[in-house]
Image (cartoon, rainbow, N blue to C red; front, side, top):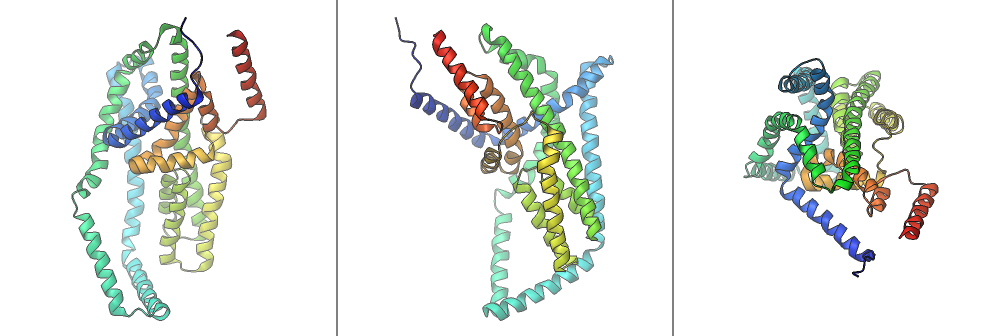
Length: 367
């Protein structure tokens, strides 16, 4: 009789790490295809309840999907128009901003000359060299892809979303039939949980972003900061990138505020507003709005965001959290991968560890 003993730990670990490395390599090499497809998958799951509601009202499937897509496009266009109107106000005050920037530039040059003994002519040479390097970068062969990439993604996303919704049943059947019959219920359970996690995450993220935008704008308006609404909305959008986005948004807001309100008290007030909003967001909005569906610990979140950024830029940073949440759902329900689910989660207690040990003892007694 062949031995049915469990493979040694190093054997299983090496296979798991190899699989993760292959997945990341594939994600990096095929990001131009995978990233838009993954975003379309998130949006398709988000629009699925709208499509189902329309179908229950007797609307044909193709028309229902088209109407759901049209609704998403209208919301996106409305948000774009709101930001555009704020940017128009920003443009109207450009002469004033230009004057303030020129004054700041002259003050900075005098400070550099006084503190570091760098003459004005040397500063001009450094600036011209930096400008030449920037122009070379912009004229490089990869610049066109950087500019046209997001535009191409926006054009292909609606097509992906439509097809994913239209062929949803076929894709689900394909996944179920890919496993043995005895695992059918488990696969259906995992798919249902993945759908629930994605819907909870995306809907909660949109609601959380709106709340953060309102809180940011109100705080900046109280301080009398110019372009408060614009800065509040931009900061809320950047907050979609966990942890890192909030820091970048704070730096951007301080830089823009400095141009019009160089007073130290105002700048400190801007930092305090963003810190308070971040505290409210992390401790109240995220747990209440997004709920307990997506429970990823902070360490894994930060590493995942950085890894996603290294593999696929900003899009990878945005997709990192839902991908990790989906992996956790799978790990929690696949025998032999439970420890990875524990590593990703943030709710493990001594009771959970004892429960897992008791389950292992029972399995050993049965076998």
